[in-house]
Length: 206
Image 1 (cartoon, rainbow, N blue to C red):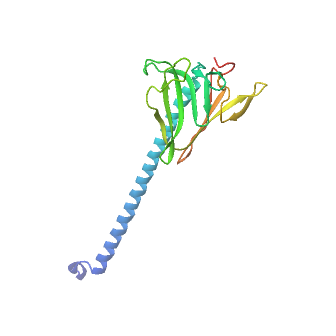
Image 2 (image 1 turned 90 degrees about the horizontal axis):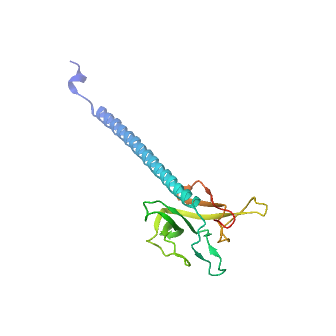
Image 3 (image 1 turned 60 degrees about the vertical axis):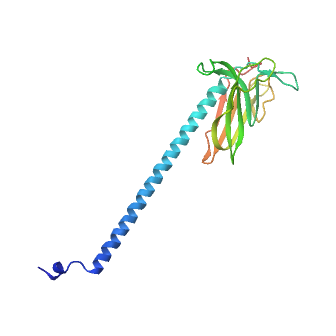
């Protein structure tokens, strides 16, 4: 038997082995932490994309289904209200699904409100009441929260019938705009811009 085998490991060899083991553990921990962070980022991105798809689909269906049904009178001009909108709010009538309050046409109200240090997009549905803007059936429901910016825009028609410029306020309350634009941005960046064509736009909106 050799002297090395009989005497075991030297202190230097033990320290070297311990150092190598510690370095390997640190490297393994770093790899696991990086992998965990990558998975977390992927999950957060997937969740954000799903939220964008859901909110966008809701807005396209609701706004695109605007019917041009009168829901009140403009106090200043006396004109029939069929669509009202500005950069932070929108009012129009569209059908709601049968499972919601037995279905039928309801006044849709989309509003941008402050939410702590950010903004949120709320929606509520109201029963039609001739001659006055209907009161809310229930508290507004947040459609999307944690937003940095939400802005609505409305496209006009030029005199020759071609698409005109975008405006922040729709100034023809007795008609539907040909198109509505929705811009949303959260802390991660802008969402894909939505441009929704209103199927019943034109003329008096009916």
